[in-house]
Image 1 (cartoon, helix red, strand yellow):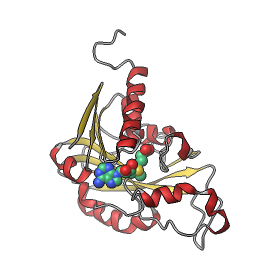
Image 2 (tube, protein in one colour):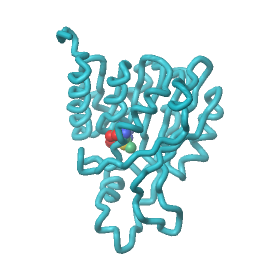
Image 3 (tube, helix red, strand yellow):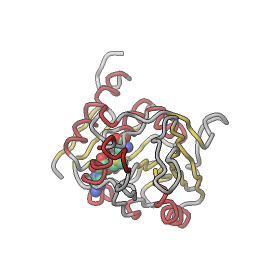
Image 4 (spheres, helix red, strand yellow):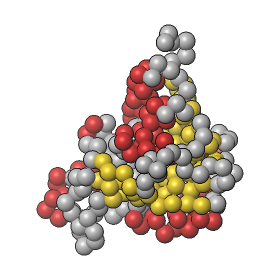
Length: 233
Ligand SMILES: C[S@@+](CC[C@H](N)C(=O)[O-])C[C@H]1O[C@@H](n2cnc3c(N)ncnc32)[C@H](O)[C@@H]1O
């Protein structure tokens, strides 16, 4: 492990999630946006307008992940984004590991205008699975399964899959408990929402550039909530 940063109530690890997550112990929720299983070829005549697909392939975001990083002995609940092709195996894994689960979705208000011999990618799925005592939280309007929101521009943080704040705020509002771990932190979107929700956050990211972005974003979130230790109210 090369670096640990402590920022307010957040602890960020630069390193490999498969090595680090098992050493961190219990969290009320693991909230992850793991590498997807995606086809990054194709795109036809629009391909040149979509350089983020190359970045997704080059940085290994399309290679899938080992589901065993989600350990029901180390968390009360898990929320995991999943691509279309990941859904069957991930749902089967979570169904066997947790008490209940729900399929939820972020509906993109401005989806890519492509179908590529498939469907237009206007929804991004996420699964919320929980054990007893960690069921989804919130009032009826918070507990809707679909959240509508525009995508973020990949150029904002030079990362192709940054999750929008409104989506992450909803997920953090629905997650039970006070502590959250995101083992595939990217630019820190889960951490920003966790800080805003008043939860303790731990994140892991192996790419130093994205790790630095996460540190900056989480510092800003901590500063905005006045949660730096010793900071005057
Ligand atoms: C889909 S992205 C997460 C994006 C994040 N939700 C955001 O809004 O910025 C997945 C991230 O996991 C990181 N990653 C992939 N494999 C990893 C591993 N074994 N250990 C730590 N990080 C990893 C990638 O570098 C990438 O930034």
